[in-house]
Amino acid sequence: MKNEMLEEDFEDKVASDIRIEPNDWMPKKYRDTLIRQISQHAHSEIVGMLPERNWIGRAPTLKRKIALLAKVQDEAGHGLYLYSAAETLGTKREVMLDDLHSGKAKYSSIFNYPTLTWADMGAIGWLVDGAAIMNQVPLCRTSYGPYARAMVRVCKEESFHQRQGYEIMIALSKGSKEQKDLAQDALNRWWWPVLMMFGPKDDESPNTELSVRWKIKRFTNDELRQKFVDATVPQAEYLGLTIPDPDLKWNEAKNQYDVGPIDWAEFWDVVNGNGPCSSQRIAARIKAHDDGAWIREAATSYDKKQRTMANSYV
Amino acid sequence: MDTQWTLWEVFIRSKQGLDHKHVGSLHAADATMAIKNARDVYTRRMEGVSIWVVESNLIHASNPEEKDAFFDPANDKIYRHPTFYEVPDTISHI
Image (cartoon, rainbow over all chains, first blue to last red; front, top):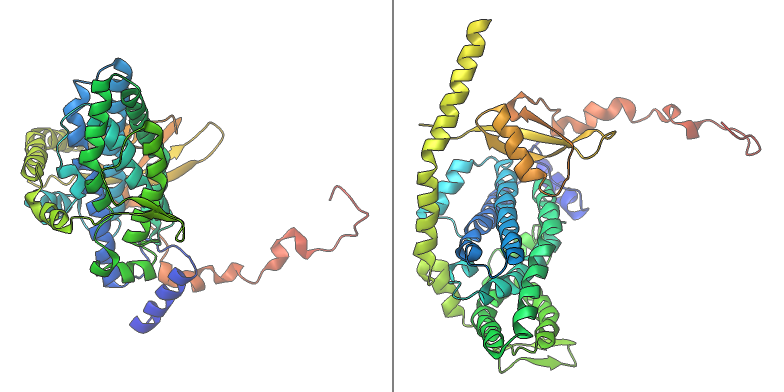
C-alpha cells in the first residue's frame, strides 16, 4: 500500500476506536510518542519504588509492612508490563534503561521528593496513587493495544494502593495530636507536587493536541487535574485535614473547585533534574543495575552452557 | 557483553478447563527463569494454574497488511452458519 493510503487507513482505525497492534502500520510520530510516553511511564513505576522502599523497614506494624511490600512489588511488576509494551514498538529494554540512567529519559517529577515521615506513605498512596489512577483509567482505552492491555492490569492492581494509603491517613488523622500533625504536614508537602504530576497546563503542552487526536490520551492534563481535585477535596474533609491552598473554593456555576496558581517554575526545575532527590534516585537506579550485572552475566553463561551440553548429546 | 536476555511471550491458563491465553512478554536467560519470572510478574493474585512461555522469535504471524485478502475466503460463506437455513418456528430441538 502507498503511504497516504496507509496513513488514511490508520486514521480511520483510530477514529473508529479500533486498536492499533504492534505489526500494524503506524506513523513514525505515533510510534515515537508512544515509546516516549510508555517508557516514561515504566521508569516512573521503577523509580517510584524508591521513596517507599525507604519506609519498608520502619513500617509501624506488620500489616502496614506487608501492604507496603506488596505495593512496591506491584510497582516493579507494573514497570515490567510497561517496558514490554514499549518493546512491542521496536525499542529495546537496554536502550530504555540507558536513557533512564543517563538522564535522557524522564519519569514522573513526583518521585524526586523525599519521604520524611511515615505519614508520607499514607499521602503517597492516597494522593500520588490517586492521581496515577485518575490518569491511568482512561489509558485502559488508549489506541495502542499493548499499552491499553497493560493499563487494564495496572488499574486492577492499583486500587488497593490508594486504599491502603487512605487507611494510613485515617489512622493518623484520628490518632493523637502528634499523629494528626504528621498527616497534615504530609498533605502540605505533597499536595502541590501531586497537582503537578498531571503535567503542564494544556496551552503549554505541545504534544497534547496530537495525542488526543490519536487517542493516546483521552483527556487533557488540565481536565484530569480538575477531576482529581474534585474527587480529593471531600476525602481531605473526611480526614479533617486542610488542603494547603487558600484559593481553593467550590465554584457553584462551574460545578467544580477553583484552585490557586501552581508554581510552574518549581515543576520545570524538578523536570529538568533539580528536584530535592533527583540525583539520589538516579544514583540508586544505576547502583542497582550495576550491582545486578554479575547475576545477568551468570544467568546468560548458564544458559549458554546448558545449550552447548544439550547440543553435544545430539 | 550483550546483556539483553531473550524475549519470551507468556501464556496463562487462568483455571483448569480454560485455554492458555497470551498475557504479555518478559526477558529471561532461559525457560526456567522465564516461567519463574512469569509467575512473579503475571500471577501475583492467583491469576493462573499453568504457564507457557515461548521464545518470541519462534512465533510466526500473518501479515496485518494482507489481512483483508488473507481472510477473504471466509468472508462470503454465510452458509457455514446455522442461521442461513430456514426451519419453521414450530420445530424445536434443532
